Figure (tube, rainbow, N blue to C red):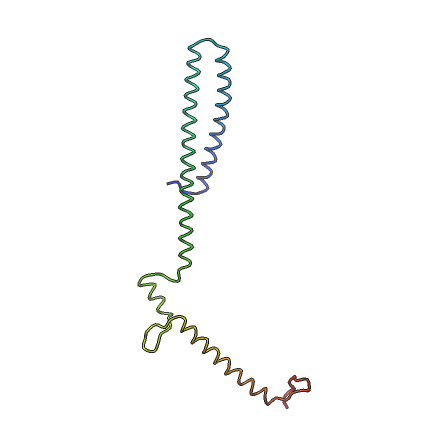
Length: 162
């Protein structure tokens, strides 16, 4: 399997540039060979030139196939990487581990009724809000009592105590 990394992308760039240079070299060589073939009437020279052209074409085809295989491997690696990222994101959204260990961890922090049964989250949140409201009212009642006995100025602001 082709793994994604700096060395692999560097290798793909090197292969691509080498292939590009070879295609340019073969193109110029082919133009020269065609020009020579048009000026020569020697059948042996034409056969030798054709053999060289075929050999160069096969070499470039092999390099091109190698490059395409690398590109396909990179595409497959990208798909695997995308799937791995999706799984990672899905695992981040999960609240806790499944199974015995995860259940024990969640049970440690769960709210329970007096008989030991687990309390639903909605009810636990409602009870917590009620407790916070009672605590707030307790402190606010003391402030209201002091404010009812406090001296005030004509504009309604509090005056210092005697």
